[in-house]
Length: 211
Image 1: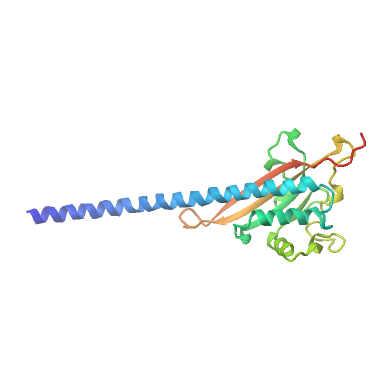
Image 2: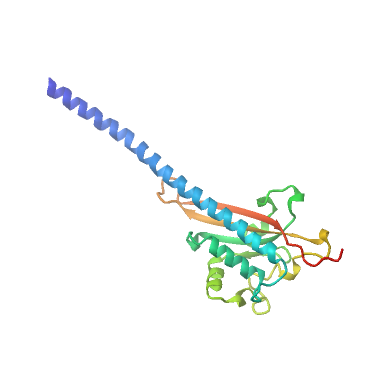
């Protein structure tokens, strides 16, 4: 009788373990996924802010080494996302933004055509292959962003000279950066990939004003 009770107890314990174990491991994996997700979200958000800051500081002005503002911005983006796999970064858009007076969020200020992957003259530069731009920055190949050298390059729809920092305060424009990251899940329990979109907008630093 005691042996039967023991066997019955062992059987119940096995059944309970079989029922509880999947829930337990799903919870552990969920916490793990959420931790990495929050980390990567913060990285992408900070990268968008830092890249926008560089663009706003430079405006229409080349870097100290003569390189274009886009070169400097992409270099800042590459540095800020160094802990991410560069293959995860699907698209980067540098765009002219209406600014906070529009009442729109930074994400809503990104032109839909630019988000979809098409550069628009005077509106946005779209980097559909950010990894190529990262490689150019790593190699110091500023010509990749030079529109005299590569007039059909990704940096040549919204030219630096079209970014206004004067001559009056009312003429100063806003620039923005939008980043899309396709991040694979670690465990695969919640799908294959997760899309992270982040946008940031800033007012161009004041240049030489006339009044």
